[in-house]
Image (tube, rainbow, N blue to C red; front, side, top):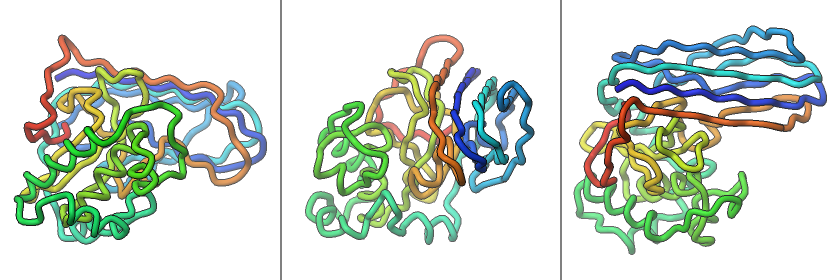
Length: 267
């Protein structure tokens, strides 16, 4: 499957800072990526340092003074990554509560809603379907500091909120779960997209309770405990403001159908 993705950001910087971007496609075996990544501050090229993160995540970091920063990324992706398997470290890490997926606050609730005797696959499918039914997708309905508990109470959110609640409930019923930032052909409105991965029988399967795009087209960017690990931009210094941003993602040919029930591994 051939996929073409791109992203453009313009960032106004008021004082010296260090920025970290996670917009490049994750490095994975079986995937061939042809890409271009350009950063310019007031028209002058900036060369970032690339930091290798977990699960192929690539962080691009650099210092920048006041001015207007432009980031442009384009990539063509060919091939299919093999399924990722659960390591002992993954099991320890992705069963723990985290900043936005407070599974420790949802244990009693999850026990009352989901069958603890069901298989991992049945629990994962049931939770994704429950979140899809329980939440209403509404842009602007949540704040960037909201976690799974706030989302459960409000009953609405965007993709990161759907994902945080899915991840928190999965961990609460003892299924390792994590968040993945992806490029998502077919997504509307187009943006960076957040989905969940649940470990079922030792293999990571992708779940998307929003149902907004076919999972087989997703392209992994960054993977972590929650959105704090997979943000497309982190700022460590002066005040910044994202003044313009767009994201595109296309797949060659027709978009595949997705019932959002059949197990799918992230390609």
